[in-house]
Image (cartoon, rainbow, N blue to C red; front, side, top):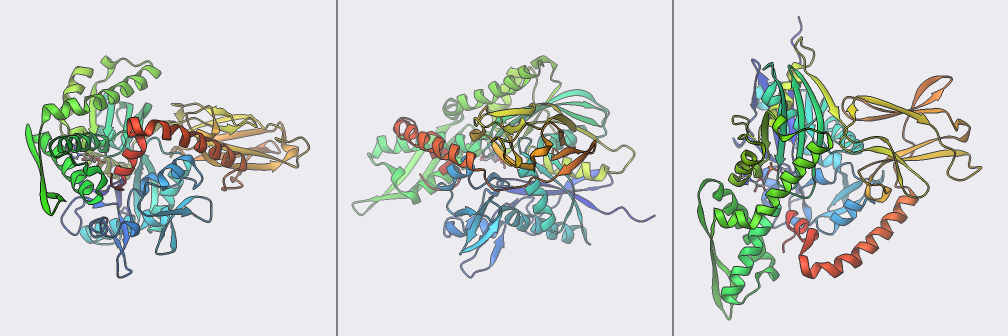
Length: 537
Ligand code: AMP
């Protein structure tokens, strides 16, 4: 019998990427060539003009910020004109441009790269690492994505995998992968809650585990709540303490801010293990030719009071998701932690208080997604293969002429699924084509949702059946009735519809006015994003 092709599981993260494999049914993480288990998800152009990837690319972020691409996970599969890309654009230190297909792309020394190309470089590096470590070629991979990723984002990650030379067997949701790492082949009958607090986002999912059937019951979270917000609270505290003592505002000095940012994160991580730290930064500033030192003590208790509301918010989001699905907290059998920020002692204490049980030990918060993806890969085609049933994280529907959103498949609907309806008439009477712009998102208005593409069919199809089919990877297929049979249609245009461009322009203008008014009082989301993306103060 031919040997089964080897397959790896990849957790393609915002900050770091991990790859895992299975040997004798035990999943393990592949070390990088430097012996670490993680590869920074960073691609850069070195001053010599070479493309560099991983740790060496990350090292040049401060000295060569324009040519260092990080956080690609936030941009991949998004339209350049989308509201989020327009908002993020001014806070990245590198150039974001419009790619030929209307997607956001990046420019390195004048050459445009698509985001799938950038992620493919990271995945290519991962492929080499795994091949060197395991010996021999590896073609097949399972890649994980956040549960809230829309159709475009999933397609783009798949494309990145293919560009890196992989046969991408499946795209799997991160919480599902984490649950697999916990429950695979253990014959459980449990409801588990996956609490994923990472660097920039918080995700919560509830899954029903029945043997090797992993069913997502509901999912939610906040794409702008994560470790960076905890760091920001410490940064603000340190800035205020320094100003009080020395009367100097360090927020105006980008180099000082970069040092404070690093020290704040390090202090936060140290406070996970020890109760007190002192943040010390010698020569932080110079005044009248004299060096000034920064020295601010910080205790775990102080950190807890600075960030307690952020932790509370994660639990409010857990409750929201549970309530939507009518699940009581007491019905949760296990809580699985994912993401570095979930190691904070306050998070662990609050899990105990909120759910009446300690989080599950033995599932590594950084590694479980890659391990679960590898287990899924290994199980494909086996007798005890895993069955995954997913839930749609955000509704899918189409734009009405008023700019409102008509939902076709509702949030938390079981996947795979097919929903059928009748094709509406063209937006303008007498037009030769029906053009239906498809969107995904929680809002009633298309401007807040993500554009997925347009179905364009001759007007003679009015009233015919149209199917929206979501396959097991949560990818959308659209079919229109043809001689009584469904015929798949490709989404005709990937450019941003005029109606959406106009709505975004209006919305951004309104926002700018609003933000100008509130910025002074609050600091707000934009300053968090700016710090997250390393833009300094
Ligand atoms: P991830 O996106 O899962 O890699 O999570 C990264 C976030 O976790 C960053 O904000 C880190 O500062 C934070 N983090 C990592 N280790 C710890 C720790 N031991 N205690 C608290 N936060 C941590």
